[in-house]
Structures are given as C-alpha cells and as structure tokens.
Image 1 (spheres, rainbow, N blue to C red):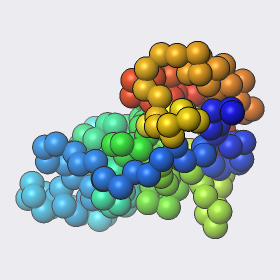
Image 2: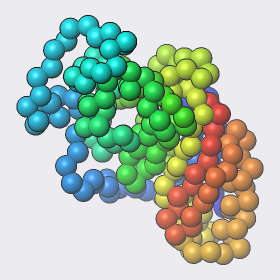
Image 3: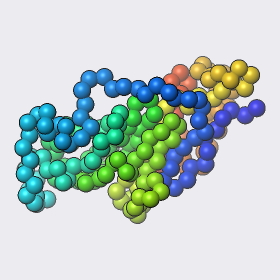
Length: 209
C-alpha cells in the first residue's frame, strides 16, 4: 500500500492529504502582537493619518494605512509586527524574505524583496493542516511576480506517512519513508528543498501561485 501523498498543487493552493487529526492548537511562547491596534495601544504610540510621501525615506513614524493586516490568532510574520511598525514606507515596499507562519501548521517565505504595504494577510494567506492557500478562491490575485504571487518556499509540518498495518505515523527512517521522500521530490509544480522525518517538516519551492 502506497504511503499517503500530497494532492496535486493547484493555483493558489498548496495542500496534501491529511496524515491525521490535529486537535491541539499550538501556542506561541512570549508576547506577540497580531494587530496594529494591539501593538500601538500597548506601546502608547500615537498615529497620524496624514498622507506620507514615499520619497521621504527618513520618516520613521508608523503609518497604519501602509502596514499589512494580520489579526488571525496564532499567525506570525518575520519580520515581526513590532519591527514592521518601525519601518518607513520605503522599507515596507521592499521587505526581504518576508515570512508568514502558523506554529504547528507551516510557513511560507517569499524570496527576495516583497512589497507588504497594505496587504490584507487575513484574506490572502490561509494555513491549515498540511495545506497552505495563497490568494484562495474569492480573492483578487495579481499577475505573477506581483504582490505575493511570486517565488516562495513553503514549509508544511507534521507530514508523516502512515504504517498501513498499524495506522500509526512513521517518525523514524525506514524504507517506506525513503519511498515517501522520493515521491515528494517529483511532485508537480514544486521543487523539493528538504524533509525531516522526526518532525514531519517538508519544505519545497514554488514559482508562483
């Protein structure tokens, strides 16, 4: 019996056949800010909403209208929200290797410089067990190379094959795991990066969504 395999990648979606139930929601350690309002209130930051000229690269005032929006519980970004709040408009237009993730589910890193100004990440990115969606159905997707429709490295977590006899996940090196990895290497539309059997972490690159 063949090991469970990810489904075919379709535009805007990276997903795989579920390998098991994920009932427990992982929790972040330490305090993080998932919204502009929470960070500004906690740090007593006063924001003016007057227009900002992109040519004024020295302007360090946080501007709400230019920050990406991310309010879904458990999600994070790299750079984190506090760092994004401190960036100028010009710096927000070229954030290097911008990452959005959700512990226990996965992450996506957009290679090179990315313009994150005004992105509604709540709508654009969805991370579920063994599945990441970028510009899901119902959202407006820009042309390839624009917005977040660009080259990215996707990491999915807890992607283990199952033992067909016991139904248990295989978390140690074995011939079945070797066959599983071989299939991951040739998945259509993806470029294999790595697979770690102990954590079930599978990383691959895509050209666009």
